Amino acid sequence: MRARYFGGTGAWDDPLRRLSRFDGAVFHPVEPGSITSPTVHVFIHGWQPGLRLLERMHAIGDVVPSLPAWDPRLVDPLGRSLHSYHAHLLEALTALGDDHCVLYYSWIDESATDLDVMLAYRSRQATQINGRRLAMALQQSLGSENVRLHLIGHSHGSAVAVHASAALARRPDQVTLLDAPENGVSRLSGAANLIDVVLPRIKPGRDDEHPFVDSYASVFGRPYRRKPGLSDVVDVSLYGGLAFKPTVVEAISGAHLYAVDWYALSVREAHRGVGFGWSPLQGADVKGLSSSYHSRRRKRPLVLRRRTDLPRMFGARRKVPMVTRPSRITGAEMHLSTRHTAAAQVLRILPGDGLIEFDVEMTGGDGSEQVHLDLDAVPVYVAQARFPVPRSGRYVVLADGAAGDHLFTARLVTDPNAKYDEDTDDAQPPRVSVTNVSIVSWPDAALGFTFERIAMTTFVTGTVAGALGTLFTQAGLRLARRGVRILVAVARSQR
Image (cartoon, rainbow, N blue to C red; front, top):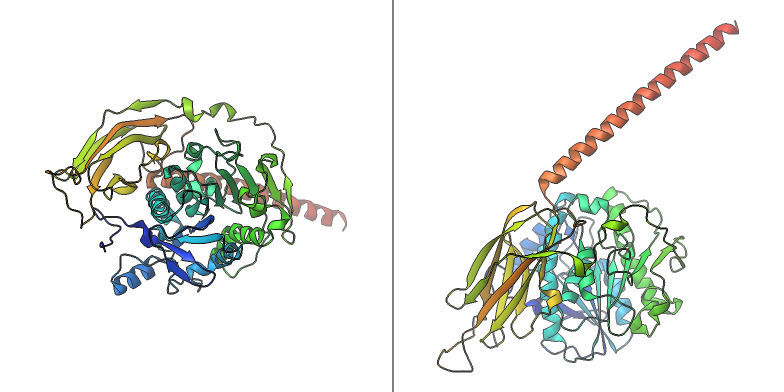
């Protein structure tokens, strides 16, 4: 049996180590070609603040690259194990019957950080590479081409689900996003998924030829339906009400996880015809669904009402369809072989740039070879020779860094047990070519995350808030003084 490695610079990546099958009570390892159920649900967790040191400590003690997310020793600062937050959804999906297989994807080693809101960007940085890993894991594990595939991502896990969908040669049947962070608060801290530039690449739709995409926002989510190419996305605004918790962290965490709780309820009560109940996997007709719904009562969470969009007065002209967004060829090319396993190029990023697109050609070898791409030393892409990535998945999102020079690197990584012989036709040494590197730009591209921009935004916000606070305080003091004078005058007149 071949040795398994994954993670780390220059290491052969085995994403199957990150995937497990849940039977309702126990998590089981997944072997190549072992998933043959007609319907497969894949759940992906999100950012895990406060678990970094604990995960690293147990991983080093166990002499393993990383701990899986379902390890019971992974207990957060609130005293709960990580998988307990998602167990009710996993159990509800498992209860659908033997025709449904439930998988759990773990990337806790890269999504866990210290307990600091400003570190959320580190988790979001790892979503691209883990989306590609998940795609590879599914391609290796699915034993049938007729599987109906459902990807469910919570928080940053929703970005992993979308990146995986773009990297799969066969699109999933449904992609469900649970409180995908996209609003102003998450963008300010660098936590925003910024997947509105990627979703059009998987071509969401309402028929059998396109994946059905539904998004449920409980605190950090933002509608996608008005973005170019996303009119078929179903956006749901959930109202969980005010939950009084001992700490602010618990209150925010509970609101963020409400989307998971709500969707689990919709699975258990699929007959209500909302959430999972309107899924095409249930045989529902999604063509008649509205693009926007909202809930209004916490005690009746599955009662949704259609929301009518008002005409947009501002920003409508900034929309630029994906097909018309200008791109420029950089001229950068990288060629790899067993003798020259790494190459690098410096790319000049301009304001408004949003994506790097490229072509990858892999020849020779036995199919196990992998190509790894990094942007500014951050892993963003991995692909295996036997699973060619479609055009839709050959991109890198420019979510970090200001305009300027950025380092784009490529590595050829081979299975440690693979052997090549140039004298035979069956085991020619592998070669990789990364060509047609181009940069896609559009006027409404989100600004890259940098600490300098966050510091400036915080400074300006603080200055404006302080100035307004001073003005209101002065106005209040003046009114108070005037009131006192009036009371004194009234008192004197009554003497």
